[in-house]
Image (cartoon, rainbow, N blue to C red; front, top):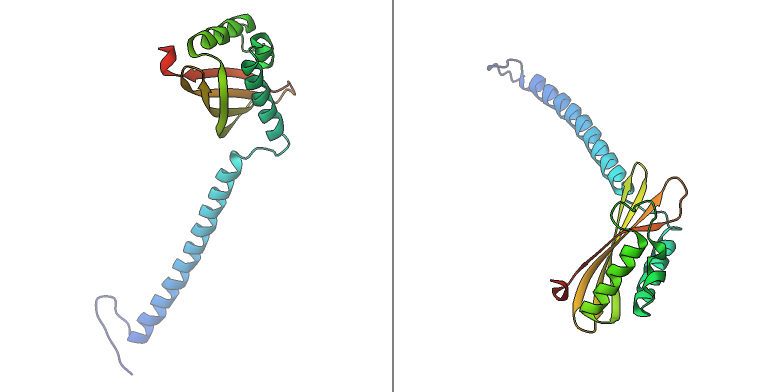
Length: 168
């Protein structure tokens, strides 16, 4: 039998047995780490998922908003704005803002939905929709933010932002 005694001592067989034992425990630790990482990835991925039944409502509100703007029915376009988020603007102020946009950019010719981002917070869920819009005089990028409260309030527009060279 071969025998090796170095700094760690023991025969070659003992050293091999010790290494196999260490490799086995490392594999168990690695397996646990992989399961832990997979669980974290799964939990993070479901955090931003939206229930399928809310997507049509969100898209319908956005579609109605832009159709009303195309028809220059600005008062009706503001009907979906939240009354609870009146800290920024009242519906009348929103209407006046939409009229001003129309005066500066011209009539809304087309709008294309580019992105939907969903952010869940303690009190509900924000739906942030990005649009590429084309007006008679200028192009624009717009963001429409809707909020669905946990209090079963109807989904409402809480923010509208437009960026265009025609508004500078």
